[in-house]
Length: 154
Image (cartoon, rainbow, N blue to C red; front, side):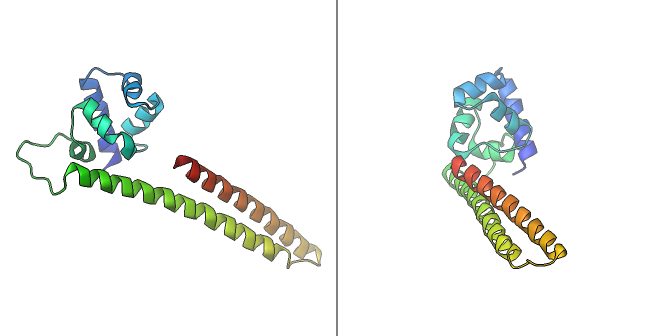
């Protein structure tokens, strides 16, 4: 599955149906910017709207994933339900991965902060202590942001 090819296919089918991005977005309950991101290959449609998108474009889920209309006699190894299940599981794993990255950033930030407290004394040690403290705070903030974004996306 290639996001660029799938995106071009979505744009092609949308234009075939004489729909603007805004009209398609309204029918699917998403923003026209979301449609634009799909069509440019920046992201894939969420599994919750894939079936509706396919219905609006008059294609199957398999055709959407392939980025082309399948021939009538082509044989599919997976049915649409299996493809949707796989798509859902893939997107869930991606969200979990982002959540773990955020937690890892927070833990590393805490470890750096603890390390910064062990470097007290001379001017050079104080400099490195302050540097580590700053990096640890930035890392923890980045972790909180990633975790928050991941949780909000669920």
